[in-house]
Length: 356
Image 1 (tube, rainbow, N blue to C red):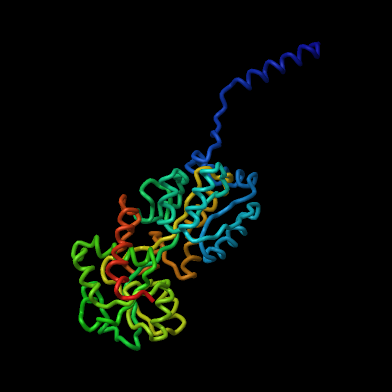
Image 2 (image 1 turned 30 degrees about the horizontal axis):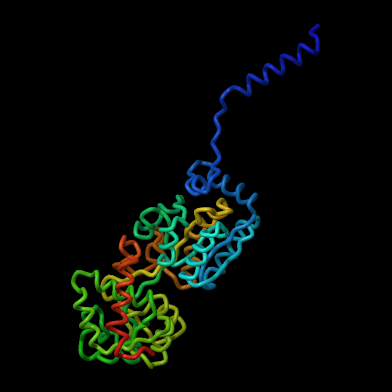
């Protein structure tokens, strides 16, 4: 009969041997960088388990457009307490830079205009990430170093009141805007991004350039210090007949409500996009990546479409018209270019004409 002590000793030896035997396991990502770029087959499981432990998510964003998507995200992941901090894009950028300078790390993710993400990116506040949803997007929608991906887009072109201008008569190209019959009949939103990117598009288009922009400045275009949406409303009321800084999404939404508006793409059109990004020191990185994947999903993109925005997902063919899209924010010199284009807006279209 074997003594119990001998059996116990043997069990301990077997246990030790098993413990020493290499076991095939998948290393779990632990840093924000590792979590944001994890591509293992158990990725979804890893993100959900990590998010359950984190239990929270803080998103820095603008406006209230995202609210329906947040509600859907909460339904999908009820164990994540998703909260929003809202402010204009530039203010969000300033806020997060101040926080990081003070060693305070609150933000997990961003849903923000690309121009508002540039300075945080350059200051090391954003974490490059990998999402399986990225394969479904046009290359121009993805920031070259993977700091963000566009989740909703707007396109600036020529909007006009169809009760004042017939579709046959309406200008269809940038060059058409120089026709003397449009002198004094056009208006633009002279606010920062819309106007600067409009001028920038003409500057970088080979057939146009700075000389063309200066010629356009002689057309007595009225600058309004209001949003492009507000200028579209002025077209609906009849105060403005034509505006070359009109967003297609505004026209479509207004036409659906019976407004007499139409829109033409005059050539390359600047894309105003809102993108999703991850904070470099996100306190809840698993939840942040669940949020990134959700906003990039087809489900969320269809929700954005219902809100009047367009998507650059390649499997949503027919969602947006075929346009020659120009993503100016992808230019490596965009910040310097933007400053120059803003000055040109003021020098050519605002000063001497009296901004309203």
